[in-house]
Image 1 (cartoon, one colour):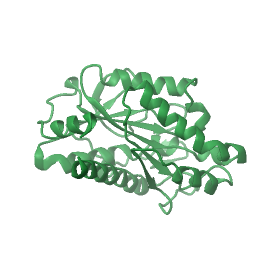
Image 2 (cartoon, rainbow, N blue to C red; image 1 turned 60 degrees about the vertical axis):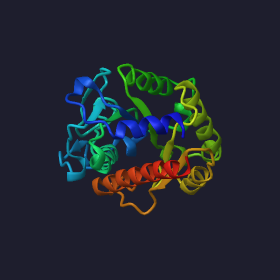
Image 3 (tube, rainbow, N blue to C red; image 1 turned 90 degrees about the horizontal axis):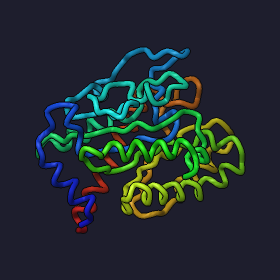
Image 4 (cartoon, rainbow, N blue to C red; image 1 turned 180 degrees about the horizontal axis):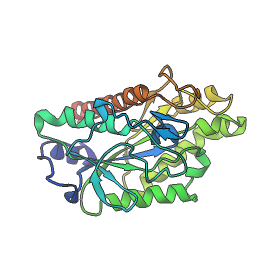
Length: 265
């Protein structure tokens, strides 16, 4: 059994923390572009304020804010991170609530979400030399300074790489390099990465990027396919309902991976 998995099981049996100042124990990085940051419920630059039941605050779910402090998580998760555009509902809270619900039979899980997604970003903007990558690694490292363990990176990005054919062609190589860099720089060689295969794009090379995403075959990399989820009228961003569905899919994939690791250890 891997070190990451064994620690996760121990934490699953640990009672919930009493306050946000204690910090969470099971930490998940949310990264990518706008559909991870969340545009559900955003129309004409304003969020309608609707929070689905699956995304309501929970005393066992925390958010690592822009000031590098843990607080009880509330939508929109990326409001102070993806500041260039209005944020709404993304997949993060539905994912976290599903994780807590699954762990409830053993005792509540203290889940921490580290928002890092920024809308409109290409995969090249997440290279090791780039500012966004450095900020992700910095936030991830800061999030565990008072305890806790990073369990996985949830990644939804690629819409901006569908405009130019060369960007789409280079996507697989760049994504694989990103995964290997994160594992090295976070010192978690077997870090699980759950990526989302595109449901939409800004250009005509959507299927090229999807093929690249579905073709990644690295250990502990799983893919959730967003194709078929309902899009907003902009034909680019997921609706609130679709963001919830995606969050639940991400949770199922992570928990299925965990169950498989348990059964083969």
